[in-house]
Length: 123
Image (cartoon, rainbow, N blue to C red; front, side, top):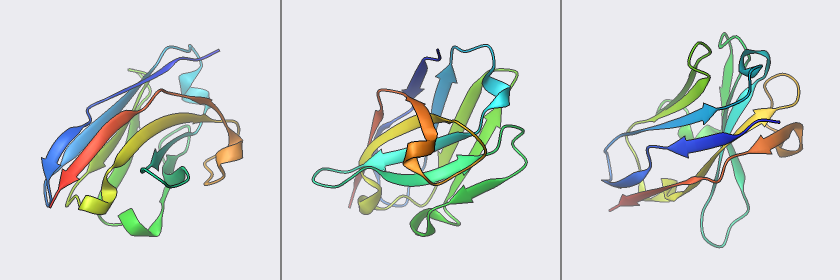
């Protein structure tokens, strides 16, 4: 069993930056791919980014490519999401999740989820 705790959300102006963190309590953190998802009011939860267990590969949804960067520090059992050039449409609750296998966009391949952190981008 793993516990995931997101932090770093907040209110920023359009064009600003935030860095989200997700701290994991499990001892085998380095064996799993990790991902970030988000959910805006009135929408389904959507994939944002994923990273391999080693951190050597990553993938992003098209709307955040070039603006967001996912990374991880296995020694700290933490995954990050650096968000630059934020837009109002990025406003959502952001969730960290642990992948069951390799890096994937498929929500069903993630077996543990954090409680989320709110990101609000004003225009």
